[in-house]
Image (cartoon, rainbow, N blue to C red; front, top):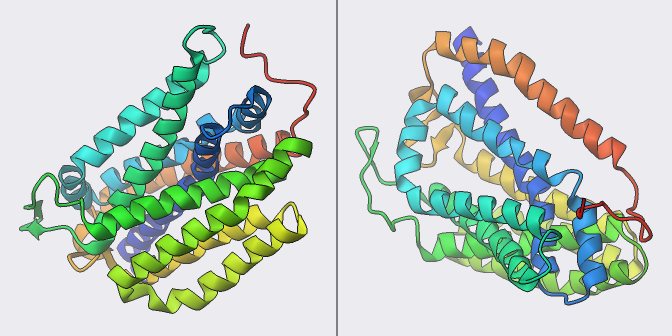
Length: 323
């Protein structure tokens, strides 16, 4: 394998891994944000926020890494995808800002707190939906002419992309419920256990709809059903670690299968990795700067923060948001 070939594949794998890590890590705190919106119990709300407070900011770093790596390693793809997805990307950025603001200001405001809670939950839903719809639009295919996007503003909005968006919302909510089972005890844990079967059914139903619209991944059905059965088993037998782990496996399974189906295309049916790659010197510069320093540091930080804050949150102590 040539040096250029190694670098192209290295950055392709790095970008794919960063997106997958983001979908899982930010996915569970987005799911917690959705579940936050369907309870009126203030104690539950505080515990939900306490479970994600130490890690949620760092989780979003992986989205930045994916975007920056795509811009540096595959600039043609960045130049095609961004115009195709201006609207969903814009909505996602607004929702990310709104979510951060509401998270930080919730305990500073006594009046109108219910509106902040609604905004926090709604922003979580919007982020998951537009991210899933954007991924669905890319998988379905983007209209490209001479390495430029040649479609319309709303071409990303199709039955398939909408189904993918709703599927990711359900998947993230399921992941959030699994996280709460893992991190909480007593009443909130029982509350999360009770919602796992409903969210699992929603995720499974949307997966079936996606397969009907686009049967490319029909081979996924059997392993997907097996992993879903593990989620249900964990919920039924109260095996604390299993629902979260099995839901993570669902994300890995679907994402890896999608990559294998379309390899070596970085834009399915349109642009291959070699066609989209930056010059070898640029890939090498990016490798030594980001690949050997920034990404490993981020990975170490992520592992460290989850290790430091491992275990269950206490029901007696809470993060002091009111200082």
